[in-house]
Image 1 (spheres, rainbow, N blue to C red):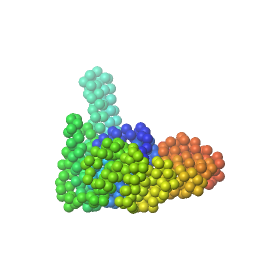
Image 2 (image 1 turned 120 degrees about the vertical axis):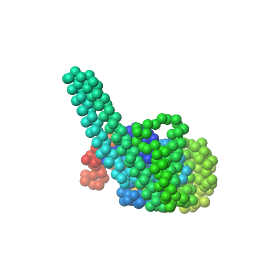
Image 3 (image 1 turned 90 degrees about the vertical axis):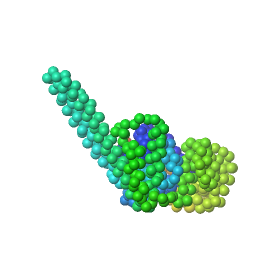
Image 4 (image 1 turned 60 degrees about the horizontal axis):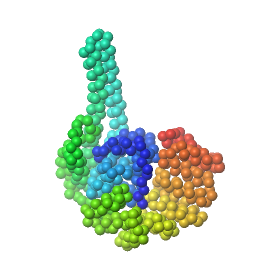
Length: 466
């Protein structure tokens, strides 16, 4: 089931400001995902995350990043955009939904890997310091000229000093933007290298830039190419065209099975984030009957008759019995229909069939077991949720269910500690500390749980342990 977090402010403004695709945003590397999640409306979905990781895996290997611990984060934003922050690669749902082929998204990932492998974020920080120094020097020179002009009663020299001070900032800004444009071109070229290494076409990248060029032309906006951080689309197309044409893999296409998974992902994002009308528009252009049936089943679950949704989910399972996400959908429908025991069985199959070993599916299984309402099912729920958290410790929602399960069993201290973890990984450090202190009051000093509570209490406002 696709879930959306509530958006906050800080990074949302940064992400929205980066309205041109392939943006490298300079965000403090010490920030954790919970801190970032406060500004980015994050999407969690086992199916979409597994697909995007499958897109990224060969590119990461080609870029030498396969062991670098890169985490992909899905952002609920309709614009076609992606950006990097530290070791996290953010991809908008708008990019996933608008891209007609996997190759287009793979090109996006390849470009962002160019930024990560090239250390562009750290280099950008160094360049910012350099530019800041330039601006300060220009300001001091300008101030000196103004003082000299005033002392010598030279109005012209004072005016020149004011111009020098103002122009220094303008010059520094242009130097920085020129530097960023150079890094974008470098990342584009690196992307083609990674695509060639994995025997994939660069046509998806060209199609993306052509889309931007069309959008820019239709907007009628007059853009100063020296005042933007990215090269103009036509410039990027010209730079890449010959490289793509020379590639022996230019004509390579995505496999039919990968394209089908991509189509189903697009339909799922459309119906969850933009409703049935958006899904219908996508399906009009799709010839994939399975994607159509999947979209109709998701729409029935979200907006229609739950009996119909269950029938549609069962029909999908008959088509692909080993597809874990069809069983997950069945579990979602049964949970919504208030049949938690049957939902637990469906989720159990999804967990068993999941090749990606997502941390999300065991949590859904645990949630259903928790809803059964017996002490035995609560114990089983704890086991499943802990499996999910072992794979994905930053899943804030999972801690909420874990706290409920411990609460059902009367284990108050463990419930409060789980709540503290949940608040911590959601970025609410104030409540995290409150619940950690409450848990410590009844936990035995020096035990692992007591020490975990102490770590939360000692954490700094940025989320780092002291």
